Length: 168
Ligand code: ZN
Image (spheres, rainbow, N blue to C red):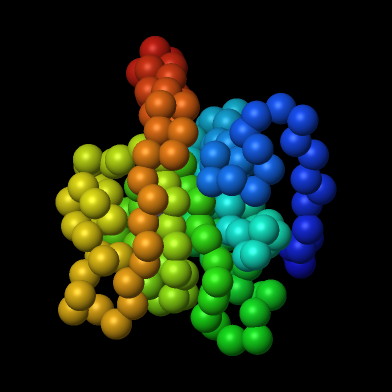
């Protein structure tokens, strides 16, 4: 399946089109879809020069694939638009701080900018447990913006786990 390069941008309500909050709210929409599908609600959007190259959400359960994290899926989708494997001039938006696998993929893809919602104290590899994307021993470093729509992202996760505990 080839991803659609452009999504129509209509924004008469806040947040303003083209801002970090705008793209993060789109990632949150993806996270809500994940929740509806019984997946841990994490969403991601990959943006290149104000164009949305890919958006997706965690699909670990439905794909029965431990690597089907939102970030990996948008990197794979978005990579097709570039002449090489480098995702130059892109920003990756994700609702939760990336894990070690996804932080590794962000480095491998040479993504220059990462924006995430809420910290992940249990497996975050950007700030919480490890600082992979800013480690000077690696040959790529990434600009990090943390805490964009933090509360909305955290709330979705809390609700999801509360409901799941209720079911069990
Ligand atoms: Zn991950």
